[in-house]
Image 1 (cartoon, one colour):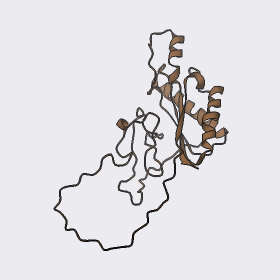
Image 2 (cartoon, helix red, strand yellow; image 1 turned 180 degrees about the horizontal axis):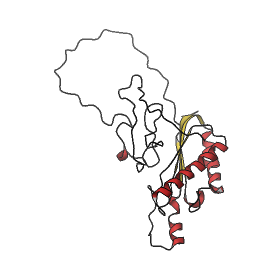
Image 3 (cartoon, rainbow, N blue to C red; image 1 turned 60 degrees about the vertical axis):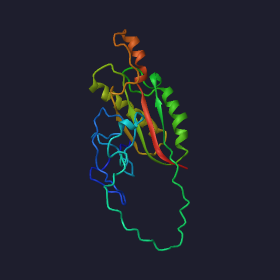
Image 4 (spheres, rainbow, N blue to C red; image 1 turned 180 degrees about the vertical axis):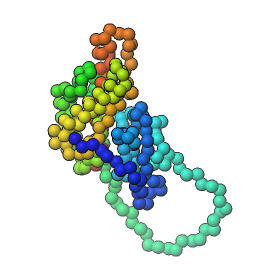
Length: 225
């Protein structure tokens, strides 16, 4: 399985008005993809990869380009000099390539049993149906980001490891199905619960109630054919 490794040294984009540099995030910040150093994962254009939980309110400065337009300081009116007459320039007709970006979520116990990281048959069938087929429509894959999640039962350290193993299990299955793209895996532990339950419920009922939190989100970034 291929892990995404980003260079620590700064890379400057030619003609760009802002410089790309490492942006450190906290483990609890689930809006952006992170590497093992909790540094934001960037695309080749310098923008940070979003996760499924990204919102405009969660935007981090430096991750999504300039956040606000620059404010011009007052200046004296410039003397307008008529421009020389030149032949009209025909604008390029080529349009920007269409993106092949999508995501799927392996939810509930379709994916994993309680306290387990082995990928269940139903989850494999879902990947084959809803992801492998769509990937075939992409001309180029930039990256696939796999994020594992657990429920809130147990301590954070244990759940962090379990969520990473769940992401790794999905990535391994993608590789076994012939996916050649760069695959980045990460675990969020129990930091991003999508369903709250009464923690005083009997054990079996609590486990069943928390099932939606045991999930893996697969995000595909690429260009369409």
